[in-house]
Length: 70
Picture 1 (tube, rainbow, N blue to C red):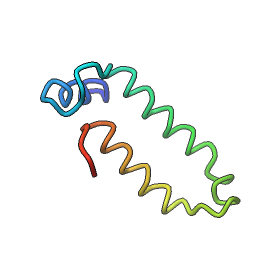
Picture 2: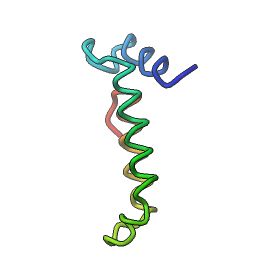
Picture 3: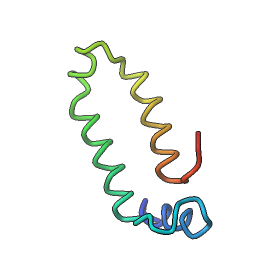
């Protein structure tokens, strides 16, 4: 089951607003992950620890997939 399908299941169950487009939501989350992975050295240079980034990413992913607050 792909990320789009999981988001669709949560949307159908009422976790997301009905106007949420699951494919757009999935693409946004995947793009965010790729961007953060690509810029990890820059974040470290700016004083942002990757440990803290992982916690933030996990929270955003949880909310983005389930539609629920962390």
